Length: 358
Image (cartoon, rainbow, N blue to C red):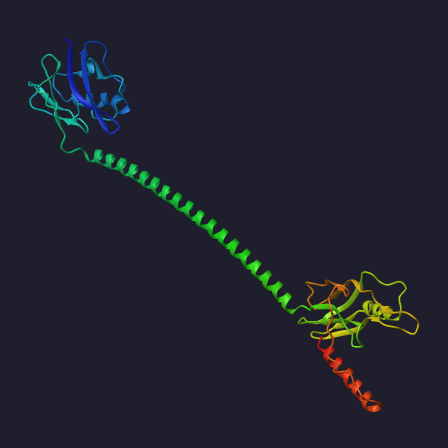
């Protein structure tokens, strides 16, 4: 019983790419066995059973009584699947060589192998290699599945990038809107505060103090307090920087006026004697308050947000220039008795009327 060596070619798969595999079958006498080498997977190793079942139908080829060694080269590449089987076969005649057609997956098919029944050797005849025009439907499904997975992954990546860009844009717009809203709120608050202050300024009381020529005559002076604001001045009190010592009758009346809280309605005024100058019966030449100093005015309004106002006014009688007085008319000449007295009365009335407007 001799030995035989047969060679053919098949194609293995590395991902979606094919590579040529040399299939070498060596039949020797010895203990029955079927060994496959060349880094095949479980399907390749189980092909021995399928090949034995196919060879058992061939006359004069008792493969089960021989030792068969099959090598798949290159040995460093992993082989997967059943494409390496010599499975599909056709019987011609028991005394003639049997032809087997290998199933080359994905890339090539059409290698025809002839096994001689006389010497039980395996040889390759008429090897025809051609590119497959139509891959198997399983190969198509696998390729399309891989392509669809890659395309879906790419689309998901693009969608994630677009979503990230949109999220960043939305965040940027949201921050800008937040900053604009905060600025608008701050502007509105400032506008409201300014409107409130303007309202206070327009409706608050304004009390001022001034020294004017007195209604009692020339060289006398009065204190005039006037509220020119739009609301009443509450708890109105005054103070002076240089009180005379001792206080005479006029100064005492001024101090009493200053220390007594009162309400001064809008467009109303208070007038009191401030200083008198002349020859008095007690031998003095002046009475009342000094010619210089500072008057402090304190008061409140009806607005609780501004509970108290304080203003200061200077008294400068000696440095205010020449004070005008009302016209008295010509000096009476050649008048006596009641006529002269009536004329003098008219002069005084005229002067007082002129003082009322000051």
